Image 1 (cartoon, rainbow, N blue to C red):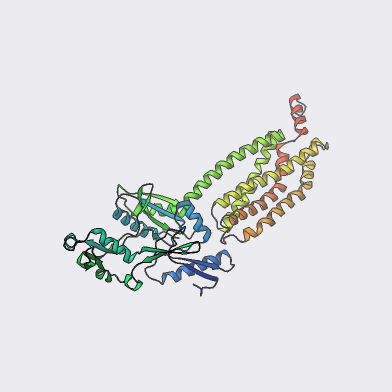
Image 2: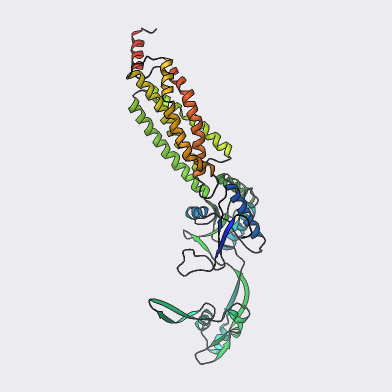
Length: 452
């Protein structure tokens, strides 16, 4: 991996610590790869090169994740992958069979990468079956054999050494050269209380077999997991395609059911909450505008400018090839406030000209209000755009999965909102009729029939 351009350093974490936070099996390892500063496209190429290196090593299951994606996935589904398919059932063999079928189907879905069955069966085991007749013949108990085997291969604490305020356990076990030979276990001497020493193969049947290194449970339910890291920005679309493919090609037993968790589920829940809270906030804004202006037409004009910003946001999403992600939605919500702010500046100033300065209601007055608010609107839009431009330019880089799409949407909405507010909004104001005191005078004239 160090030979791949763009990789700065590589370090490996091997083994398990007694108080480690990751309770992995001892056959799992993790590489921490530090990249040089690069654009988002180059980062994806580097990840593809890492995957290409890993595929040259047989019998390995591997996944390539950024640090942020790793932490987000673990918080959403408990797995490191972006998408996890939980398979629940009572029969372990049935779960393994269904998981293998689902993994084969998911690999055919466009964009699927790093497809894994998290607790695969078929791990090599050395099975030791005790012979009761041999135990009775030599006067052994089952605990004599099991304790000896445990001490020989796992180790047993025989003493402790005190070093200042540290306590170091002294563990007794076989040398490593004898522990790695599966055939040497048969010659392990077992000593009885009478002093008789008998090799283990005379007291037990030793066979090589296969089994499971772990059995996963969730809510007291047996679970098997298929994980995948889609190489696409539309995670929800990938999950939908995978779900449809599984429904067509995999026939689930009656006792087995599936659950799709991960980034797509978290994004859907976040979108629901964001839209709900945005709707409540929008209702509050409308009420505040109604109280502030006291005129339904002014409130309607302000709300009519919202599409000005949404047009630019949609164009930005289409031009960048992004999807309607959480970052994009946050950008659209922000655009609502920006568009309303610009409209409030213009409408309030036109009302000020008419109500306070006594200007007549005319097209010239409306255009004067637009000219006098040109600089404030442009300056606020420009300052916002300059602040968001670096985030939009770095969209796709690691750590900017949310900020990049949000900044792109806001920039696109700012452009169309500013232009249309200055060109179209004055026309709408003139079409809607007088504002402020001129509106009240016109209503009175209409009531008296003076304006026909």
